[in-house]
Length: 436
Image (cartoon, rainbow, N blue to C red):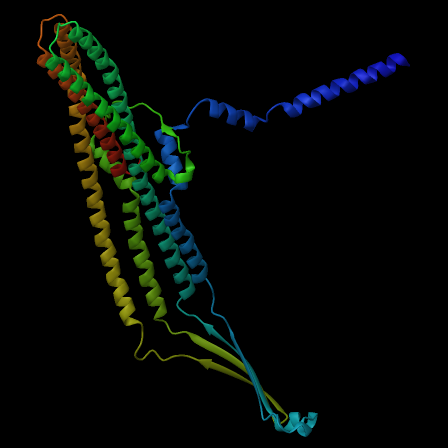
């Protein structure tokens, strides 16, 4: 008995310990949050930024409601006319209560009850619905075009942030490197091996590197704020950062294939084509509205104890108004949308051509830097620094080499950002991020 009881006590204690550990252990979400907080600020890639903007950008969300509004108008366009019901009861003795008898109401009053309905001809409802659907389809394409523009703006701002970070990294490296030169020069100056004027010139050069660092830091902070506004202010935390390779991405595509792809994928061109369809639907609707409708009516009448039924049919005579003006206006609107479609198609071809040429020009500049001039700037600076430290070059030569190196590095980074933005502009012009 004692053995059995001790086993039960031991088992109970084991369950209590297990339960304590289970409830004390952090939940998976809590563990993930702890891990995320220990890893530092949230970093997003370019694809992350685009997806966040498409999901949270308020201007885009506002534009997307136009689709829902047009879908609601489809419902309205498909509704049938409401029937009309009417009735009357005449010769009621309101001020002579003694006359309120069944005999008087039966033999001395008149009553009517009727129902009428408008029968639409020319398939007006079907044409209304089709016209509304065509407008909705065009609205979807216009929203897709807004997404195309937003994607380009987000990408451009993303690369601006990367440019600021790359410039910041360069400035930080230059400050550390040149600080060593200042320290060595200070020791040399105090030992009498350098004039005070030369030492002050070196210190002033350090000021330029420090100014570059502060300006790059400010450009990064402002760029992140502007990007956050595009993504949706609450979609990322305040201390977020960007991640991804800021480097050359060669593109091998010919102009003809890009233009053909753009004619297939550009949402603004598709919207212009749908505009022709919508204008044609409006023309068909106006012609249907020119058809006269028929009103049918049935009445029940009670007159002096006589009960009768009456049927009416009402048809307007289209002598003057046959909707001629609206039909003519809708026909001219078709011509207008056709011209707009042609203009948009030509604009697409021009956009792709200009973006392609811009990319090629930036590509040639990048190739020049990468093939020779970055190495030349590095080598020139290293040679000048070595020669200056060993007395083989003047201070002015060394400082000039430092300035040329800094200017070359900054120009390359700016050229790289211009190239990447030009690549995004080509993607925007084609209408897709996947180039042929």
